[in-house]
Length: 438
Image (cartoon, rainbow, N blue to C red):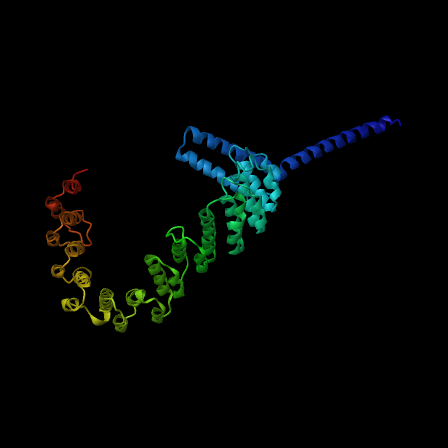
């Protein structure tokens, strides 16, 4: 067919335009295949930032460089958080582990374990990166079977960790029971290792669910990683209202902490009757001292003489607004010397009734502390002179000289003169340095 010249001039531009459009479309197709929504350019930028910061960390590991790396890693984490295209991960270099981390994120987001096969190096000699990927997918799918894909004879804990994370995601204690079966493929010869990872699973699940019964499933009794450690961490995390929970605790300090939590949450003092006898006295005392119940009958229920005295002293001390100040005769009427001494110290220091009450204290350390505290409260230099232990006496003079007392001496000369009473050479030099001209 022969095209007339007239039509040829019109058709040629159209043909050229079609070619340009096709080329443009092909280029755009390539661009969007290679970089959907422009993400490839961002990936390249992040990779460049990571390369620069890690290079700098090897040559000049400064705080500024460390912050730069942290910022680049945060950008990478944010970039891959919702990513669903594994091809974009190919933009990242393997040397930083970013390619594997990117693939793990994509696999988790797509809930597709087959993507984990792209991770390299892989296999029994390099189980870590791939196990992280499978664990992420297993958690996303809440499927224990994915954990079986992790093969790691050298580090079988990677398998148990996957089961633990899925158990936590499901809130399923039976997941911890599956661990021993899963690890049997590794032919582990010693049972302790399996027990340890099972215990770790129950502990994590107990803390996540706030369930003390799961602590009971832990077989080891250790105060850190064992059953008692589980109780302690859980007691510090949640509020406890049921005192029966505390009965399963063997460690005395942790049990005390448990019952203290119960007392703080209890609506009334009747809870003390449900507490074990060895801890019941402290329950009544804490209701008087901490909860502020002014009921002398609670102190009368206390059998231990020291706790009984402490209850009576706290009750009387807290009742000053209504009953007025107590005196030395009240202190003398207490049963135990330890609490008598504490009573006299409160008279002298808390109530500022005079340092004369310090001399009634029998215990030498408590007496010295009484004089020192009284001096700090009142700036009474004479109280420092009555302290027997030399270093505490020196420290008392130094505090007053430095003007650190509750009511500091106004005269600088008076404060400076106190340095001469300090026997310790270093503390005396430090005291004199307070008054040197700059």
